[in-house]
Image: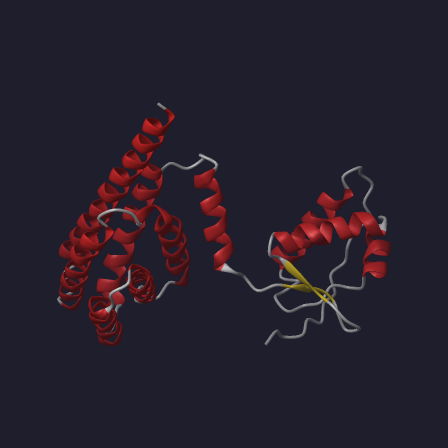
Amino acid sequence: MATANTEKPAFAPIKTQRAFEVICEQIRAQLAAGTLKAGDKLPAERELAAQFQVSRSALREALRSLEVAGIIRNLKGVKGGAVIQSAEPDRIVQAMQDYVHLGDVTLDELTEARIAIQDIVVRLACERGTEAHFAELEQIAERTRAETSVEARYECAAAYYDVLARATGNRMFGIFVDSLSGVLHEFVQGPGYETLQETLIDSRFKLIRFLRARDAEAAAEEMRKHLERVYRHVRKNIKAQTGSRGARKA
């Protein structure tokens, strides 16, 4: 539950043709300064427009932009209005997916980043993880083996990586891991995925043994080999799909 702020955000008048951009910048600046926090409600449109000295249409354009960015949400009704939103990691996943789809980030870059981040995650999990974390990882690995559908097994994989990230004691790693895993999900599925999953399940049990032994080098190496297997699988499927499209065009 958000704590009440005693200090009210002060906004400066705007004299520019792109007023909505400056409004967004000022609101973001108030967030950075801590004057505005998640759960805080912005003043009513009429009052905000007066503070900024802009038209209601310019203000609404800014509020729509902030809502799309996930910074505010507009509540309806008598007590409605613009409220500062809590951080949503899902938006980071979506942004990364957009970068990949637009061709700004390659699969090679994505994989390299994932291997580097998971190397740090595994080493920190070895150092900071508890038996409770390791037991939860083991339960998820056992559940994965019992599942029969591809989607259910993927959900188990996502849960496994989530626990591994939590074992670092640093929430930022959870955001990074979720984002990269979410982007790669759409590329992983395809021919041979079921066979690949069997190998990956065995790898997860090996990783748990290394974590319990606090063997960071062995754990990091196992994770690296695991991710490289996934990468080879994805590359093979992408090449097959590209070849198939080329054959149909011919």
